[in-house]
Image (cartoon, rainbow, N blue to C red; front, top):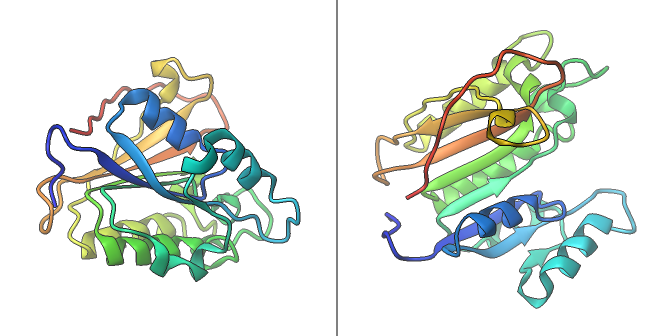
Length: 210
């Protein structure tokens, strides 16, 4: 379903942390309305990020503190899916990183199931730039799988690396744009924000949600 020019953009925030995506979107436009969020830290009794998120956004946080794989059916229909899924298994410098087959790497498949279930018009994801080279033994495989998954759901794919430092951010980030689906929606974006480890040549780009 296309988002009209004046309607709210319903947002679902996965791997929400303390709400960085939500803050950025709400500062960008009042049209962004987070209707559901998920934050879970396996093995962490304190669940501090979830508590911080709930404290920041109060009764309107709509944040579920549970393993994402167990609450996929609870995710409501939405227009924009955002999330910073765990990066450890995609860092080729990490000893024993297993990529998309790793304990945390497999969380991509929960994202994919939500996309299959809801087919949001927009997708905005964050990860380290080493995702592009993961796994170390077969570089590029994991990102290729992710792109193929999105293609199979009707998303035409276009990606580009940019440096967020060009836009006043204190960190250098890469953004990968995936746009123009072949069916279901007239326009769609999936953007990967990837943190760089070393100084690299800056690249410029722009994107817009309308």
